Image (cartoon, rainbow, N blue to C red):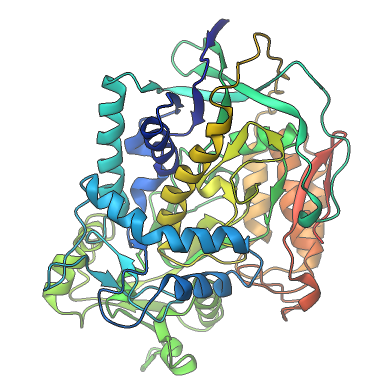
Length: 532
């Protein structure tokens, strides 16, 4: 096994949007980083984001502000996100967009030459900056180019085609934490361990490398690999998160899984029909066979088809029990489709054989984003010293439901914030010896079973009886992924209410006593949850 000492370097696991943002930020601060990824950045989940990035630029003269952005974000998350973190993110959003523009992101422009903005779900103002319907690809391209320049300058070392295996710790207290806080507010003391690196494995040679650094930023994306048929990248396996859970890292809000209202089946997964289509005027309707029911416009006259995603997904779910549901874009001006929805039109023609200028697309909700993930403070540090998290793997900004357009913002801003926070370790000498716990090999077929079990019961609508039965089924499985899956179900069972993306038909109302975050971690080898 090779040992690579990266004194004064920050190790970043994941080279999607959050990871790239972290690397660029560190370089600006004069700190080098090592960027680890299983695949090239071009294959990251971030490339697939379509709709845009939120920022209160107020170029439309509607009176938008960062405070209103905060209010709508916090409300959409049903008031359980980290309020301080959300306020800081929304305040920084305009500068984030301007910085992306300086990196070469080609945002659409309005007739006055300003960055164009569109409506997005759950927001009363035009706040979402976009690059046609390929915003994620445009932003990723710009940041990939910037990081390549930093690689040439020696400020970023990239180890692509390397899988994360486990974390390395200092040689102080080698025991896992043996107790958990009763709730998130009481998790203040940092873990006695200090994270000093990672064990990674070359995907081609099988060689393992003990990479020792001054701190680690996890930017490994969402938990799509633990579920079936999501809109997410197949490279987001969830294995890294399951390993962190095994090591005793605290997770939060695992029951909150966002179903995007408008997806279609394609190639064994769900293809996203971007919210941008509804932001530009696309309309949802149910086809009775005789006429059309524009059910969102009838039930929610203020925001109509742009209600928050949790609400829209549930309405489509229930309507589909009676009639098929379609998204109609055929009445949109051809200029709008060509200039603002070109990528979506191209994908529908290629993969669905549909011309959206002429015919509607049948849609259904599909798993799209995980609000839950690694629990951190507003500085993005976990309870383990030197271990940070950013991007979709981090539970911080979105609470019970994420606003469209806030994912790209959370990734770019979160990567930057995590990097700035990690600077305090940059001049701390790395320990020459770092221990790790060899992760067990998951039995063949267990991950497939976990995917089926979680997908069956953590849908748009849930009930306690089915989740308890699933929990019993998981008892026969022994993998770390199965242990992690138990935490999802335990969190969902503890929350006996409906809040945001977590809707229980046996507890259909939101309840004030559950206006708290849920917490899950391993205590002495057993999955224990203290949500409230």
